[in-house]
Image (cartoon, rainbow, N blue to C red; front, side, top):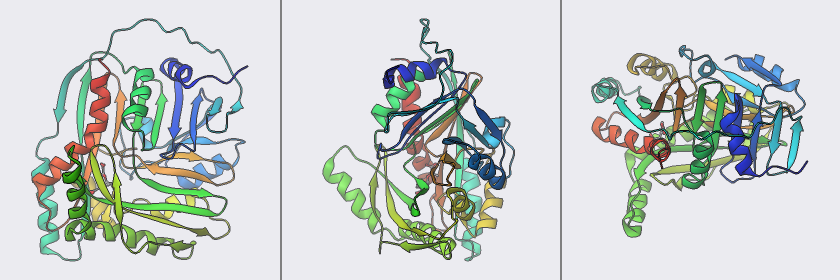
Length: 384
Ligand SMILES: C=C(O[C@@H]1C=C(C(=O)O)C=C[C@H]1O)C(=O)O
């Protein structure tokens, strides 16, 4: 059998009941998996680690953001060992082929029928700002909101993956499909990669918009690199990562952040690398780091309580660790932002922003709107 083209795999994704697609930002790893060899519904990292260690090839999935229960089972923690797994980078096939159906009937193109945003987000964010202004020990909380989009037809996944690769070429891609539930993320943020003792993680926090005009775009980046609020927001993340990894790895940490550019936004970015101690695995780092203050806050317990109280819906896999685990304990987990979750004719989008005592709630709202654009674009393009 010759190795299938990616186009064929997109068609197959469209028809499969259970499927996964994971591609790293550097495109060095790119996987498509179909069917179920084994699966686990769990939010328990130790249970998942034991399960993954017993497999003979990589598994894919995610652990939920926090303890709140989402209405969809998959959003509460799920890992899949696909029946057949195509490793595109290595041109390697794991598992075995079954019933490959590629005949796709003509279908109507999905149209956006309705968009519903949460109300009172700005007021709720203001509560958190007030709490931080009256108590200096409360430093940062990342508050998110969800948007519900109604489509006229189910998503066309073949087109969606093609569009994802075209519109978000430099981000991670993660798609997990189980029957009618589909989680999709085009995230710039790596939580952890472990490869043969080598660790890579990153602080990604602090945001400015992009501009079509090159001079203005550079100006926005320069302002971001010198903005006290964004630098503080960023430093809280880097400091936490360094503090939590002490005793697990010898780290190399750059002196200050650089700029990471995405099509819609630019971020302060600090890549952190190191050598891990014996026995340290991808999931043991996830256990230590998640949620970093890039998606949670500082102090952690206070921020998680704020998130549970002020956000209208549980996050599930939104803003949560998602990715690939290898039986050796190596793997790569990214942060499931710039994401959406499709279920029964509806699609929920998620975006959040880091809130500090001197944040402007309306500006933060605008930032979350920008962060929803990558997924909105994919939905709009479904009709083309
Ligand atoms: C919460 C999100 O993004 C996070 C928050 C950021 C910020 O507030 O500056 C930047 C990058 C991410 O760590 C999101 O995209 O939904």
